[in-house]
Length: 124
Ligand SMILES: [Zn+2]
Image 1 (cartoon, helix red, strand yellow):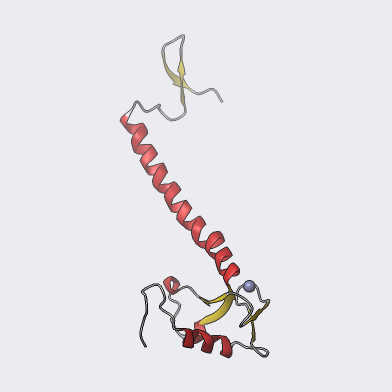
Image 2 (cartoon, protein in one colour):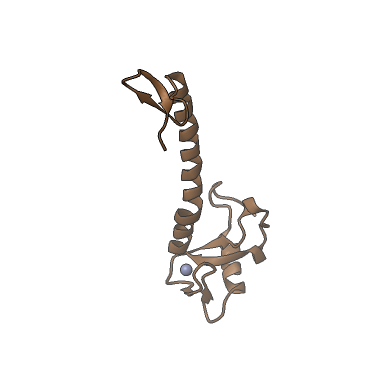
């Protein structure tokens, strides 16, 4: 097996083979993400790993199924990207904490009383 580019790991032959294995009709296979039929020649589709490789899913044909290109995009945007964004938020929080700690840190549960000119316990 030869790889044209690092991004195109799956050969078209294997892709078509996986489609054929999942076929429920002539050149039609259910999308492994939405369950609606994919037409081999009319729809834009990709091979999705049913179980992500990162979650110990195996890179074998039985772990793969055809999916609409759009469904795979949705999966990427609703499952993968929120995780990435969450990680970025946590990173920003950590950086924000560092940023605050460099300045004066207000004691937790305290408010500044301008008349007494000191921090007092926050009224409940
Ligand atoms: Zn679909």
